[in-house]
Image (cartoon, rainbow, N blue to C red; front, side, top):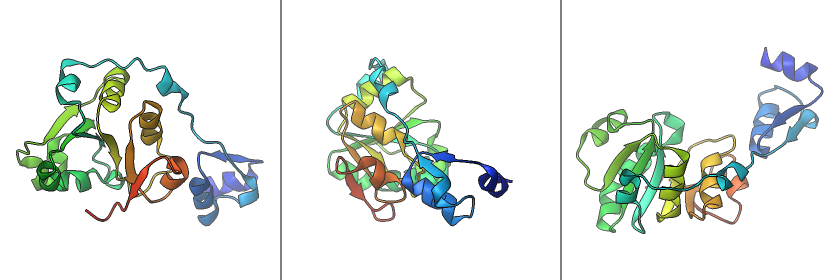
Length: 183
């Protein structure tokens, strides 16, 4: 159905050059039909960062924020798996989002003194946590766009993210890149 729609559409909009290339690579449509219109970051400018007791307790210059998800391509387990080396460096990991420790198997079932699981947080809480932490780690294996790094940068939070898919296109020269496969 998608290739049929791609053949009959006058134009197809997507959020990154990477996604445009994927549409062409998978035969959805020819490149000439694709328009790239990146996602905006302006919504994050309207966040009113405000800590809750939980985010205030963990924010700080030694905190690495990770947006947790059990979706495999988000690759959060990479950062959790580095917990011992991060602890030795005096760093802690704060996982924000829908995941819980149990989605990360044996690592998540251990008590890790430098890994905190905050669960879902409001935009205001996330904004305050990002603003007052060392960085956002975004180790995704693939992203069509990658909005969280853009939101973090909007709030003045440094970003360390994967060098794959659309992410270099989104981060440009403003972020530190790392392979999502290497610890």
